Amino acid sequence: MKVRRSFWVLMLAGAVVWLPLRGAYAAGYQCDITNDTAPGKTSTNTVGKGQIKIAPSKKKGDGGATIQLNVKGVSCGSKCSNNVIDLGVYAVGTDVPDAAGILFNVTGGKTVFANGKNKEPLGGLFGPLASVVFNNSLGIGTIKLREPASDPTACNQVPLTAGNHCTDGATYAVAGFLVPIDPSLLCTTDTDCGTVNLTEVCDQTSHTCMVQTCTDDAGCRSGTCNINTGNCCQVGVGVGCP
Image (spheres, rainbow, N blue to C red):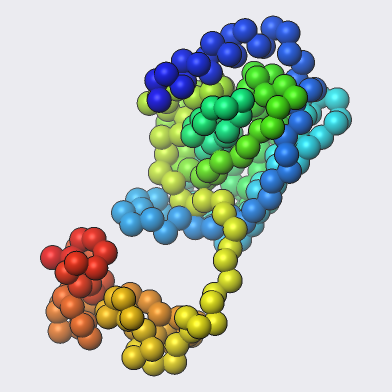
């Protein structure tokens, strides 16, 4: 990773001088924002629903593209200012997982950038990175919504360096395409679940199989209770089963 980042720093140093921002046109990108469900998630922030959209722009001053974050129903408590869009990209043959950290705030449960709107020119936020991809395809990679940066000014650097204090907040949402439920996975009773994990039970509201919660082994229809996570589990299936 150090080699990759060094490469980007060198490219930036040589490219900013002579490559105009208006020449960097990104490919259109749009997907849904969903809550992070990763095991061990530490953030208490949650989102309702919304999308992120990156679109090409030929308007002078936009830097080749605009970014729009349209998310509603955000619950952030005391962590509503200086949240961060952690944006990864692939460009000119190089993968940069933490290319940029874009600051935004949450007002009334809605996301807004520093300009008070949910849309901003990407060139001003990406700065020299837009110059590097001059007339090249810009691939948008992993997008995460993070809790406040410990040092918001660190987000001014592009690309971000390892150990930066811009994207050090806990992840609470990710961008991705929502995949519809396969009808064959729907259930009506617990016996319809557990072809792999026998601890799953049928949720009677969504009619989908879910991992059974528990407080002790007696509360599981199969397997044992992992009291650390509060879920039933089976040894050898998944991880973290005692």
